[in-house]
Length: 219
Length: 219
DNA sequence: CCGTCGTTATATCGATCCGATATGACGATT
DNA sequence: AATCGTCATATCGGATCGATATAACGACGG
Image (cartoon, rainbow over all chains, first blue to last red; front, side, top):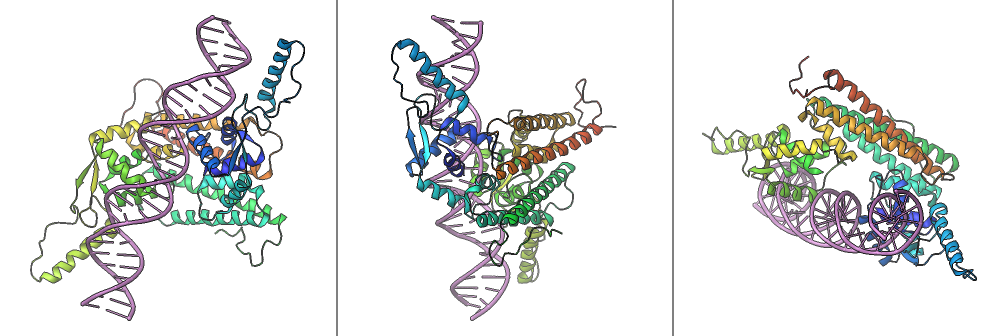
């Protein structure tokens, strides 16, 4: 599941593990942060599979030229200040404060990312959130298909609760309140999704031929 | 995390694994179902810890009396029908269609359940949903504390997104939409929680001063 | 009467993910 | 100069998931 998140972020810019983790935490829908116990093994796995590769383990961005001439001490201090500033402020491409492992995505990694974005067998919430986060990598039709599959899934869940499977009669107040909250959350999600679909259709008027399933008619 | 769910359900009635799984799936907030690969190891773990014990591995509920007299065949058929009906409809206490492992909770298990209900260090969403589902096992003051701790947590998350950590300026439309949905979901959750708190305060007017965790709850 | 299918039921395997923890370099503060 | 906070990588054990194996039983059609 993390593979998609990692590949998606590395497709934007090369990163090392520590920074990757922070950005993962900023992604909505993911739990607030990802533990290193998941991240580093995942990176190792992806590297072994050839989907990402270590770009460098030396500083990359802070201009490596200008090999300190003249006053050695002064130049060294300036060089260090430059390093520090690059680390704290810019946060740009592949560098970790000093020679850490910086990863980049490969072509195979991009193909894999596309697979993960469209795989219809995975339907859990977090994966969907990740897919939306990176869906600019999809074509308009694929994007629409993603949204509509999600819509089907949400409706399935809603109707699952509709008929009282069991525990029908006397459930306590708290449980009932929980169920109501759950139902409301699904309804809100569905409304949000419908607005997404409407927007998407506006940019892609003729997405496929016999596309029905218009978002709007929920009884 | 499942420990709480299992103990909570077994506190209501004895159950065997298969039925337990179905009820787990009906609990709101849990993903739609729990895999057996989680459930059976969890049951074994709980049993080894003495929190749960195998009550019986023979049918328990379907009235063992009335030992088929008269026409043997007819009586046998009736008995079987009775068994089947008990299985499909009533779903009462410990029986698995024929002599399966039926678990019950122990006193140690109930103490452990209470611990899991009030532990302030665990703050994830699923655990909170489970706690609400079983919070009738708490005193009014404990319940209120649970709700208010959750409230603090939700506000923390909301304010975390308030200031644009990074990714400030140009994020794509889909990402922005995701963030908005996320914010709205937290707000809705917060509103629901507040209504829960109001209701709870109505039943416990003086939850501020001295030791007042009276389980009797008189006017 | 018999094969086959669906349901009930328990169990295990490998892969993945999390939380805690260890390690160490560096800058800033005191 | 000692200490603290941040940056950075890594590993360990335990929890969970998804797939799979096994088997008893009822129902259903041929």
